[in-house]
Length: 236
Image (cartoon, rainbow, N blue to C red; front, side, top):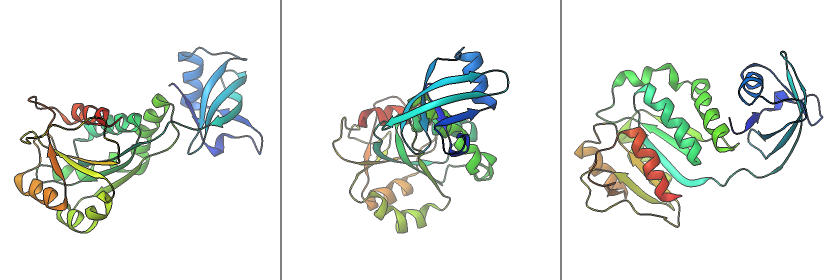
């Protein structure tokens, strides 16, 4: 935890004091081994980052006086369109995408996505937010990404995708592509990543017809959780 993420319910009245219990208290006490008078990096969910000075720390609660007057890191101007992976993989991917600064994530269906994945309890908002919070704490960020679920591929591509990619460079990660994924792109990007076995030809054709350019990462076939950070690092 590189940042203690704070929510409005943590504040004591209208003051700049916060009171924390549960896992954040345990982390500060047992992992960070902090004590009264120490300063911690803090951030207000959806707002600024700054410092918190510990006023009280015991087995029951942590109280800090905070001053949050700095902006969080700039977001990465990338929209990630991801064919829904296995739930265990999705947990890790959501956290890593959040760490990289992406603020728009769209989970879509594809021919090679198992239907059972769409019934996973991890797709519930509260479950995904747990991984988002881990990513924000790691990156010292406070701005939650928006995650949209689109379980119907063709209607999404035909009806919504043209508007989503407007004003951006749209790429689809495809091992059979001729062109390499570019580096250091100076404008917003939309990147589509398929399931572990890749998009089928029909899906690639639909994405190309919408304006996407197929790009590759080299000769190696990467897993989804390896490909995502590798792709995003090129746009940082």
